[in-house]
Length: 98
Image 1 (cartoon, rainbow, N blue to C red):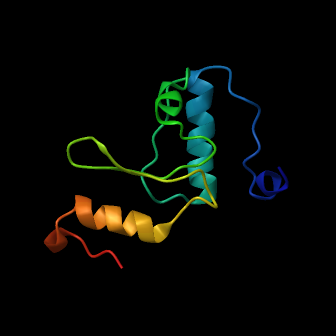
Image 2: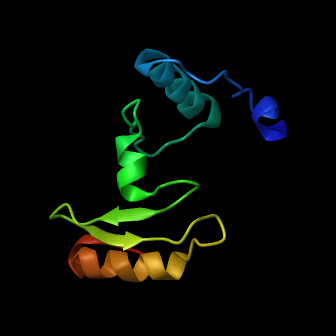
Image 3: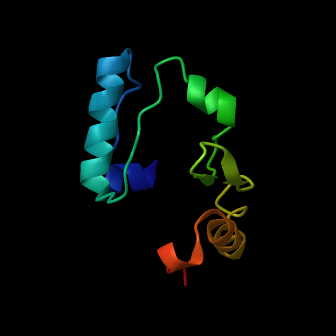
């Protein structure tokens, strides 16, 4: 909570989809998130389907299938495992994973 106050991203829980979109957009801007971000439906259908909480990394392949699912983070994040999955999912001539 302290870091939320410091980063000025402390909000009341949203009560509807519109409030949730506002909070998400504010967090993306204030935290300087530079990768694409998506917003789950208000009923959290995606979170429930993918068990994304508390934190998870997913790699979705070109066929829309899960190519990699991390253990819960942040301690379950294994960059080398994700690298291997990326190398399998993306042909070598199209990627420069280091």
